[in-house]
Amino acid sequence: MKDKRSKRRLKLSDYVILAMLAAMGIASKVIIVPLAQAITGPLFIPGGVVAGGFFMMFLVLGTAITGKFGAALFISLIQAVLVTITGTFGSHGAASLVTYVFPGLAVELWFLVSRHRGCCPMCCFVAGLVANVAGTFAVNVAIFNLSFIPLMLSLLVAALSGGLGGLVASSIARSLERLGIL
Image 1: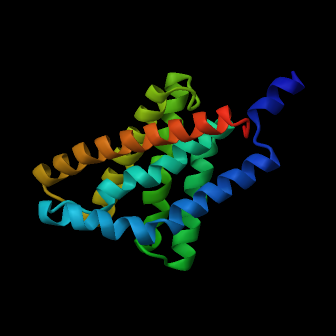
Image 2: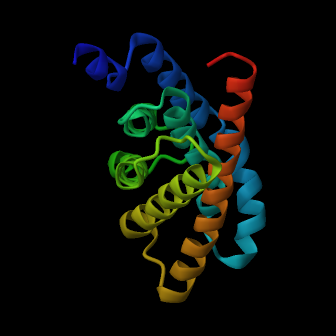
């Protein structure tokens, strides 16, 4: 029984990997968001909707690498605290605590319901999709208050970009596994 519980718990090496993934997600915002805004600006869609697919990839990748429940939530909590404390690019102040944690909760809920842990491209696609839709919706409620049509367009684009980010996370995790790193 102790062995079964220890397989479910995060180890120190898992925490280090998850913290590094969280930091990479925040650090990449400086480059990715302006590029995304150049695409989404003419469509009157917030840039984070497209860029979010890239950021949500780190939540999915954390779960795919560790295979443990709570990995995505841990990454989102670290990101929320980092952004709130440092006031980095894309910070929404105290609302960041909600807008960053909500996608992590959505990923954990998806993996709980599906009984997957980032083990296949399909579950990673859906995990990225739900994460980015949840994040886009949370930011809309907290900050933007878009009307119905732009909100639906934003959520549709968020679903696509989040799903693609989940597929990239799956591909990275499989590559690390093939290389014998995991």
